[in-house]
Length: 406
Ligand SMILES: Cc1ncc(COP(=O)(O)O)c(C=O)c1O
Image 1: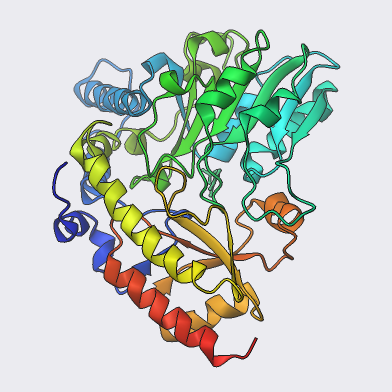
Image 2 (image 1 turned 90 degrees about the vertical axis):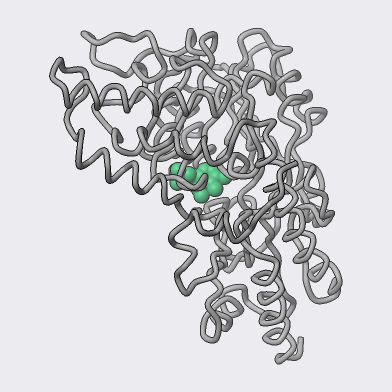
């Protein structure tokens, strides 16, 4: 494995020179300097509609094409299996309008997901008179703090009428990694059933191979993967056979992009993706391995502290620090403190950027975990965070919570 040079890594992200410690990376990551340069360069040199015969248009076409190639490569997909959109929420909404399921068909929807992977399916079910079977992990009544989507529990929710299963690879609140490969195997025991996975929280931390996972649809947002505000959906060629197109009648309908990316869009953003792949390296490269080691160190440090105060601090999600089962997205609550009050108290005296709330996983936080609208405190780290930052956070946090009797 390549040595991880944290200073050299941080130097590649211009924003990390600012007077702010970024611990809200599940909300959005900082952007690589090479990405910023690529966007600026495109806008200066080739900001025209692609597809024309003149020089600038040819440059624009080829730069956009490199972006699509990079996006597909990132997930081990084909170019015609990738579509871009303004956000994952919008791509899933568009996707939901392409399915022509029949009245009485069933869809299984994970209840602990971000609302992006819930609302569109609820709406689809109402529109087409489908039955929703909610996938609620066991243990809610007993106060389970680490709800898990398990393939074994999915089995009981399937029937010959199941057309779609939706779930998250890792929750943006809990950080626990789900075994998507096993979930895909179980979902596909039903002929033609599709599996749509939200990879938004997972993809910034581990390489994703959609073919190996066996998913039909997989969505992610590049603004959390060191890039700009553009999102990407994968849809396998086979799964696309079950989609109608939303595109204009006179256009081609051959690719996922033809089917759901409406109008022109995001040229400068899509063409800025290749530098992200250059930075991350291929899945088997040392760089992913070294990011993993760094993130494990950070999450172990924070979790060891939080776990050492079990009477005062409740961790939501996996308490185990092992990077194979969780990501460095860590949510918790402190006895005697409103989450908001705690975050605001630290904001007054420090430059740690972190947050409180439900993070659009409202059913999970409010109903399953039983927390009010105040929600959890979430600290979410990336490989460019330093051990000193995390230790500094723990010291400042501990000083604040020690001030107030429970
Ligand atoms: C797990 C998860 N899914 C979906 C989304 C929605 O992504 P977007 O903002 O691209 O719609 C988010 C955003 O925070 C997320 O964390």
